[in-house]
Amino acid sequence: MEKIKEINSKCTVLTVENIDTDQIIPAVHLKSIDRLNFGQHLFSSWRQDGKLNLEEWPREGSKNKILVAGTNFGCGSSREHAVWALYDYGFRAVLATKIADIFSLNALNNGLLPIEIDQESYEYLVKNTEEEITINLENQVVIIPSLNKQIHFEISSFKKDCLINGFDTIDYLLNTEKEIEQYELNVKSEVESQKIN
Image (cartoon, rainbow, N blue to C red; front, top):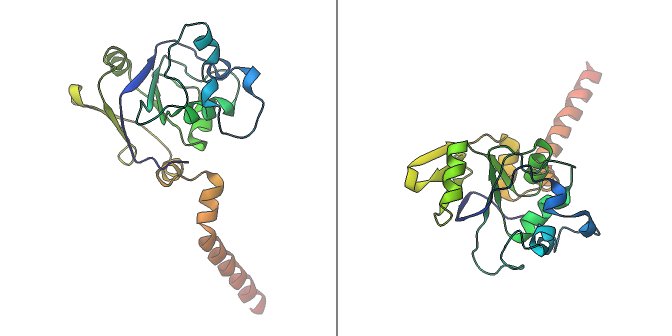
């Protein structure tokens, strides 16, 4: 996964509400547990019907990394492939007034930053897609320059650390191997000390 400290990008806007995981990645494409190449199927039903016009995949160069979507984004089944498709397409953050809990957890586990924003900011971003905004993960703020506005967002310190370092859960555990080994030595030493006494 890419390290995320700060994202500077224009937004791709999708004003549909209650977008579920089957709309993000239709079930017909769930044929692999390899995270690669799902970006080409992102919102594929809507794109085929002409309801949605996204850049062709794979996207080259520095394109929009932030998706702004209608409320209750990522509802429906717990489909990790939905996050894989968004990430593989090139998105690194999703902003919405409400994001489904299970989707948020899947997103954080797979390098995608889900952020809930207020209605006023959402409406502004929908109307001003040419503005580049900043998401600063270290300070936990979304910055909208023309409004001189900073939106604070919450994230667990563990997930924040993982995203900043580009770790998934396994990477995080492997990175703490020395601390784990030291802890085990301390426990073993304490147990042996108690046996002697």
